[in-house]
Structure formats: structure tokens, C-alpha cells
Amino acid sequence: MAHGISTYAYFWRISARAPRPMSLTDMLRDTASLGGQVFQICDYPDIESYDRARLADLRATARDLGLALELGTRGVRPEHLRRYLDLARELDVTLVRSMLNTADHRPGTDEATALLKETVPAYADAGVTLGLETYEQVSTDDLLAVVRGVGSEHLGVVLDPGNSVARLERPVDVVAATAPHVVNIHVKDFSFTRRDGWVGFTYAGCPLGEGLLDRDGMIAAVREARPDRGVNQIVEHWLPWQDDGFDTTARLEHQWTQHSIDTLLRSA
View: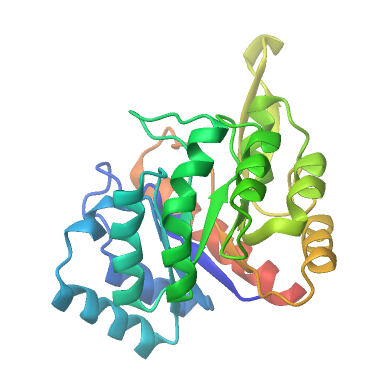
């Protein structure tokens, strides 16, 4: 399993709150300096506006830094997924992550299966795998019904068990159900803390190894179910904004990322 970093690990440093938001090149260089092997450009719509020359520059930068690239988007409409397949070809990407729903399209399992049957064969022909992420808007059973309904080795699951907690699905159950179909893993830890006055809980991220994610169990389950497939581990965070501002938030974001990569390196 190779390990890497997602744009989601730079959530605040590329946001409008940053005095100078990091560019993709900044993030690539930072990923390489931290010891990452892969960079996942996930939910980063600006990439859709890049022309071929700019995409070639990005591909060359990643190559020179020793990084493989992955892409991430949302939705299953064929024209959109074809656009991301074009981007994947230009960037030498072999894994594209998506999600079933967008703001204006929430297909049921039958519709999603039919739409993906239009698109996945082209991904397979190009040697690109499409992964659908586990998350709270879609039950794991429904997500797996779509994957099985399409029935292609080039369609699988991007496993992020923390997302499904908001649907009252236990991470251990999500891991067990999806392991035979996992093509990519998002590594982020999470925990519950009591609100002031013990009125409810806050569910948020925490440094890897300090929360509820059983990463060792998750990795073992995927390796047992998919012994012949390389499944990359991609670092993400749910870091809350810090009350004392951007500098503190950005510093913590960097520390969490370094800690996560160091943890993955030690367990490789």
C-alpha cells in the first residue's frame, strides 16, 4: 500500500481564510517533503479549467517530485465522469474517486447503476479505476448494490468509515462490508467530545491514533480481502477551525498531516 495526502489535508490552507491560499504546486511540494508517495486532487474544481499545457506542467511536477497523482470529484453523470477520465489520461492518473450525489442530482441505486454502466467501460479501457466513497448520504448497502450491479473490477469503494457514523453505521461494519471492493482508503481519525454543560456531543477529527478509527483493523481487513491489489492510503482531516485564527489552525493542520504520514511510514 502506498501512502499519500489529499487536498482535504490542506482544507484551511487552501480556503478563503488563508492570507495566501496554497496552490496545487505548493501542496505537491509539501507532500513530497513530508514523505508522501501519492497526492489526491480531491473536490478541487479548478482542475477542470486547466488546459493541456497546464495539466502537462502539473504532471511533470508530480513526476519530478516522485509522486503519483489521483483525482477526486462528485457525481455519476456520464458527461462529468468522462471529463474526469480525460483529466486522468492527461495526468497519468489510474484512480478517480467520486460520490453518488451532487447538489442537484441524487440518483437512486437503479439510476446510478445504469449511469455507471455507461461510463465504467471507458474507464476500464483506459486502465483507470473509479471509486465511490462511503459517506452518510448513501447507505453502505445501497453503495454496494451499485458497485455489484455494475460488476466491473474498475469500479470499487473508497473506504472512509468515519463518514458513515452520521448515518448511525458502525465503522467496523462498514469496513467488513466494503473490504472486498475497496480500491482506495481515506485515513482520518475522529472522536466524540461532550459539549459544554454535557448537552450533546461534537463529532470531529483528531490526530491519527487518538480517536475511534481502528486503522490497523481496517488495513488488515482490506489486505485480507484484496491481497493482490495495491490500495493506497490517503491522509485527510476533520480539523475544526481554531478560535485564535488562521496561523494556529494552519500550524495544527500541518502537524496533523506530518503525524499521519509518520504513522503510516512506521507501520508500512
